[in-house]
Image 1 (tube, rainbow over the protein chains, first blue to last red):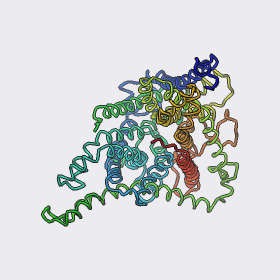
Image 2 (cartoon, helix red, strand yellow):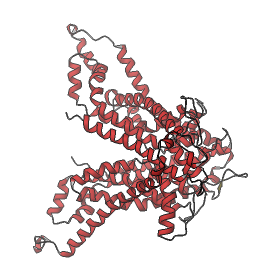
Image 3 (cartoon, rainbow over the protein chains, first blue to last red):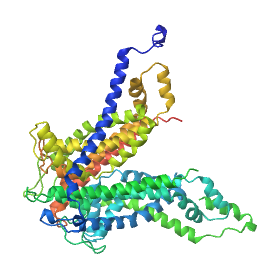
Image 4 (cartoon, rainbow over the protein chains, first blue to last red):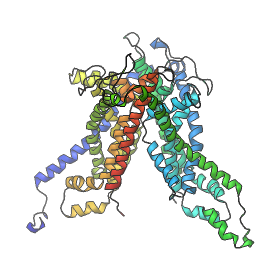
Length: 297
Length: 313
């Protein structure tokens, strides 16, 4: 082209038009994607906003749509998240510490653990439900269809998220910090406990919040381990039957016969709004943590 | 390990205080190993729980009938256990989702990476990640109460059942757009600027740079993003459980209701089944099928990414 000397001049108009058209098509892809998701949220908001009230938050489900509320489901979710948190923080952080600070990456068993964690992240959530059903609810551990079994199932499901985020946070602490600590006579564990972990807390906390944000909306594994769809009491402990926010939404969308005079779908939309509000709060917390405490070495 | 080397180095010089074996340190390391084993045990648990019941299942039902049978009605005696309708249902919906999500997701990624102002990108990326975290039950609600009645029936005038594969598939496409867009955008942004500058220097337009330089260079990441989208679609339960119906149809007609593997598991496990019953065992057989399919996809993706990954510095 340059031999003809034409490429030096302004590009031909048709080429410009083609370029502009391409740019507009790409922009509309992005616009359409965001628009569709905005429509989704707007639809739920329009359907549900009228039903949100203090009564809705503090009442039990009912066969009468105008009296039904979400208290047992909301408390069930709080219990599940508490169990999940108590499980994923120690196990997730300890795994991350082991893989980053102790494991020799050239050993086959350490590589096996790493590959295994990558693969676990791709297992469908329903399959975790089957694991929970076979081992935690029945079989070897036989907890029954209780809060502890549900929370642990969710914990196993989101554990890879915590491990991956934890490893990144620990890796971001520069080696000089460790060397300085060791040179002053600290043992390896003292170095980890007093230098490495405190420096990586913001990254780990962000990962934990994102993991909980994933767990709070998971429905399928809870259905499989046997969350109750209609329950009129709040959980009283770890061995209590439970419902959860997404389970309540599922029941109102498709489990309950709706008629024009007794329509449960707006209630489902209202419950979704509460769930989304919880999610946004958690995500905002994660973003705030990341920005506030992010350390540049 | 570093502590071990330090201790060995110090042992030659007693003045520094020779290292004694620190049992506390060993204990802690042991505890950390135990924690790391939890994830290995999880995988073992998944495989053992799936296989033990699946093997019992195949004692009653011949493998051939299961894999190639075209009728699925396990809960009514005499049961029929051909899994094909569930597999085709899963792939029909996944296919529809991809037709929606791949062009839109890649287009959004190309715009963000090649055209958008850095400030736009900084605002849109977290929004996409936030949207990727919306619980899927919300998409199920949207498909059933808005997309089918308002868009498909009223706006487009289509004759669809209230539960149908089309709405579930399209809405599932919306669900995976943020995943595909966000991860492909990461891959495209990672292509070094010098490649683009070289192409611009040779007189290429932005269109040519995007499609002939950046996209091929980022191919492994883009494919990984799409595969992740596919495995999310195959494993997705709530959208199909709510909006696609639970009729095991062996059909390519997306206006009809279909049943997927995940739908069957969810719908069947909802009732409290007695351990050891045939219904209980079918959950595990279908779960194994689902697990093997996603595992194969993951393996192919890892291999593809390794083969085509371009490493720049």
